[in-house]
Image 1 (cartoon, helix red, strand yellow):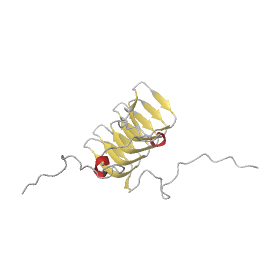
Image 2: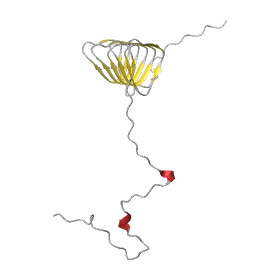
Image 3: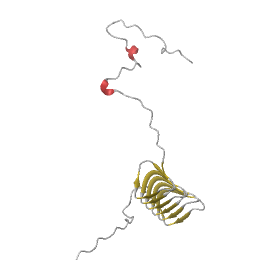
Length: 169
């Protein structure tokens, strides 16, 4: 039923001294050459979310591949990986993020793969999402549209109106 393997036995001596035994070099790594030096490193830790405090008022757009937690006021568009809107926060602009958690007030369009409106959320604008969760008590005025890829703007979505140049005489 069980058999003793030859793993722990010494390798047989080679009859030809010019040829080293094949099993003697198996499993023994050779020293890497200078050009192919490999350095193992620990995976990089995910940086903490950037926090915009309650007393901060930002005018302008923000874009990051990381996470943002907003507790203050932002007048402009925000693009992030994970965006958390605090209860005291107010956003006036378009939000685009992989994951959006809304506890505060938003006036503008929300685009996200996962969008969650908590019971304290106040949203005035359209939500374009892949998955959505709306808790009881959340206030929402606008339309909800499901898309497989809500992060990219589609041709059917009306663009943000721009100021028209004055006609030339």
